[in-house]
Length: 402
Image 1 (cartoon, rainbow, N blue to C red):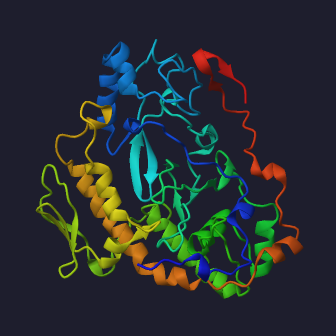
Image 2: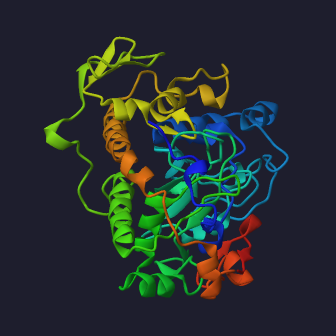
Image 3: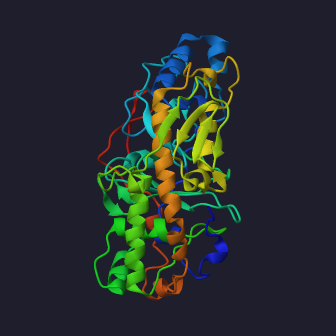
């Protein structure tokens, strides 16, 4: 799969940073054992940590400059977890939550602020229906793959390039209130294209049309309203596939009734993944899945093959005796189901990549938006909105005022 590089974009296309002004750095977890592909593993790791004492517990915890077992921190917004110091009162295991741990890789996280170096509470405050997060991918010169992905799960901040991009919520407040857009942008687009434009229309266009650059994603705006309409339609379909059919209510399916199946069971502990292009088959140490379209195998983000990265996250060896070493005794059936779904998603996206690339030619740029008074956005739009209706528990059970 060939991606659109920064050389293909219009030089005057405005930055997404100007058009969706409020952005947040991805969360920085600080310790890898608090995230896992399955929730059972996280509960087992928690139990092991709580059962340990003294120096053993400290070593298992993996303290950092930001978090130790003695850290006093507030609860994460929307989460019922302990705020007493972990060393004194760990409390019950928090209920794991789904996060986008990397491109197309939803995993589970222990949502306990005492365990996370930098959780970005402002993201947690606005998460939940109908929020969507636009996640910029780290810039890599010539790296194949889309520069912008969309997820409903809280972004976990992992980037294949090692340089994570910014997270841009579509809405600044819970419940889909106050779009995170430069004031006047939707009105400008509505006048330009002759009909009302919604925040989700805008997001769809950016998913289809965003282009990478060293300064961040750039978003060309076409003069032709038919190009805009085609791009929005394409972006809606791409976003719906990325969200596993959440927008349309219909799960992604390959055309022509094709569907990947398990032809030979995945072994208990597979260590390698390979692709047989002649038979369109994915091989996992004797396990075999087909048909797997070439578009799925070749799909990359940040220049990294998504399927290989997904597999490595579940099979990479861990340090013996560490909490990371606690995991399923054998390859879970659920992982196979997730892999089948991921193959379908990547095949559909890869097949539409030429259409996405064709939207590179745009004629409207930052100058048009500046002339209309849309840019630059007011400084206040770059800060999170005040949230006064969400009481949160501070360190050691104190009430936190926002």
